[in-house]
Image (tube, rainbow, N blue to C red; front, side, top):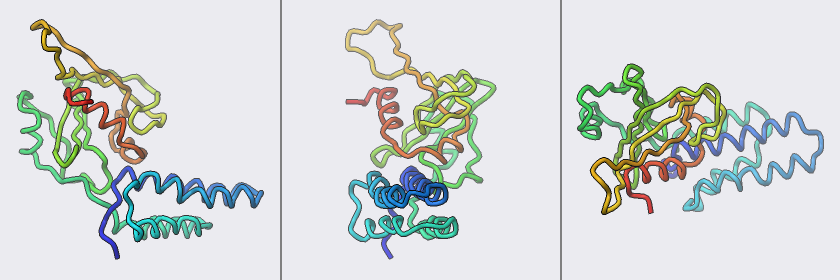
Length: 219
């Protein structure tokens, strides 16, 4: 048995292909179409694993043999031991990420399932603040900003329709000759409910790009 290697967004990418294959098998009568989807499903899932070992590739290639709902569910359960956990954080660690926030409202860490999150996100409704914590290059980083509810829309992180808010953060990136009152705001529409977002996110590139822009570290 190989070591855990599947991050939450990668598991979602696998599940997306498994679900699509199952739907195709159940609804499409053309065997050529079914076989095409069956052939491409593991290939698309593997796109989320550019550095997969041979053993890891063999585990993911099992997708092509799935057909029934029971088989698909069993396969997803089979992958559970291979899931990597988001680094667990304490209230003290979160407070250090936001030293300028005097009364930091914390998420419910005790009920957080770290294996099922790509990022830790929560709201402070009273202050209309949104917080995002992510492990970037092995270091825990946190950004925060104002949010404005926008009803239904497409989240830039998970690319799904949901209840979204315009999340606006002030970038720490400042030109060398900037005036004292200079600031640069960066905004994107993101899921109001981070749990929903974490269930659907399949690519961390938009998240990492956004964090880099806010923190002034993007290249």
